[in-house]
Image (cartoon, rainbow, N blue to C red; front, side, top):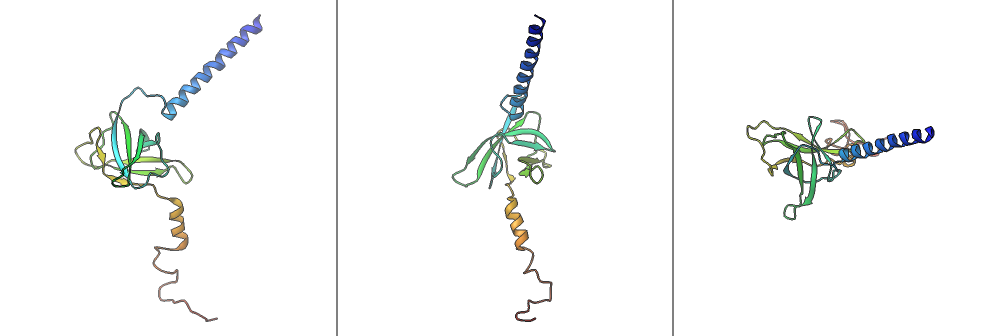
Length: 165
C-alpha cells in the first residue's frame, strides 16, 4: 500500500513539472498573453529577411515587444511590420528601428534605437527611420572579391606587369 502512495506522489510531481514547463514555453514563445498591455507601431523595411511574426523587439538589449504581423505593401514593395510595444515604453518620434543579429550564428531580432525628440510616437504611429537585414553572405563576398576597396589590390604606384618574369 505504501508503494502505491509513493507512486501517486511521484506521478503528481512529474505532472506538475510538465504543466509548469508547458506554461513556461507558452510564455516564452508569446503564445500566452502577458498581464501587461501593448500598443502597435508600424515600420516599413526594404528587407525583413530573418525575422517573422513573433520575433523579439529589443531596446537596450531588453525585450520590449514582438512582431505581430508582416505584409507586403503593393505600392512601395516594402515589407510593413506591425510591432506590439509594451505599455509604459514610450519612444521618441525620431527613433530608428533595424534588424540585428545575436552574434555571428545567432537569431535575428528587431532593435529600436531611441531618438532625442520631445514628442513620443502615438499608438498606431509609424517609425520612419528603418534599416533592413544585412545579408552576411553578400557582405563576405564583397570583402573576398575586393569590391569597394578602391582597385585591383595592387599598391598605389604599382602596375600589373604583363609578361614580365
